[in-house]
Length: 323
Image 1 (tube, one colour):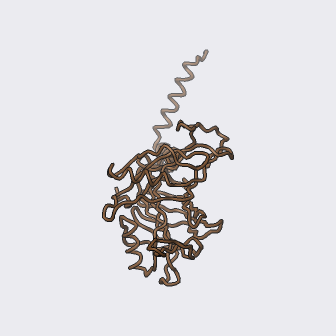
Image 2 (cartoon, one colour):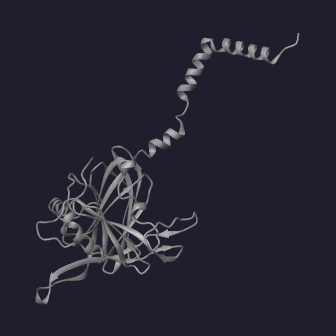
Image 3 (cartoon, rainbow, N blue to C red):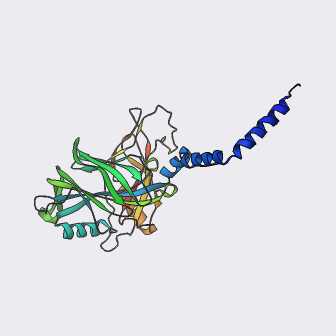
């Protein structure tokens, strides 16, 4: 008898039906399904579900007159302003002459590296932070700071819960600044050896809600502000701040929150085309713009040559609260 393709398919279907109906086969299939690993795509989506809006505050202090503090300390209180943080750390840990030098807020994904610089005595203090793991409850990060090409603080695998402030102790360096009233009643500053102290406060949030991303902070442009598209092999280095200027507000009128500005930095390091992106009150914008125009930069570089680039600066007056 001649067998057709249809008859062969019919026999195979019938055979499969008899196999699946066997109780032992069903049990084996169910066991295999239970042991089957989750889909790798779902795992990847889960890893990147959360990001962290991170506030880094850089301080100097007199370690020769202060009590000894640990290299890493989780603070029992997270405050809103640098002034409140200085008061809390000074009272709680016996830290003397604690002064704020720089505050930066940045939104990072897991594994995303971010570097920032702050001029101190005509040389930049450069720090890099990398959140190695981010979960709904907290972050584990690495932090390193260099001054004059020397490591002055390095901490790896630091754990911080959501909206928990962690304090990191660094070493001494020539980045300190002593302020005093000179002849004629004018305030003056002189360099002085001081120790480094840094606080890190993460706020865990869905990745889509991250603010002040690294790519938002700086990107190459032409002289008119139009974005320059980067090729795969292009190397872009964002501008480096050489000197900052703080907005001058009258006593008692310090804004709450932060002011975010953006400008185009020329190949000569000059600040042009300043605009306000976010502000708690438009009344503060003029003074913030005036201060930003006084910044000095080392220009951005594209493939080793100075270029125009945007630079977004957030002047933080109070830390963002938990969401």
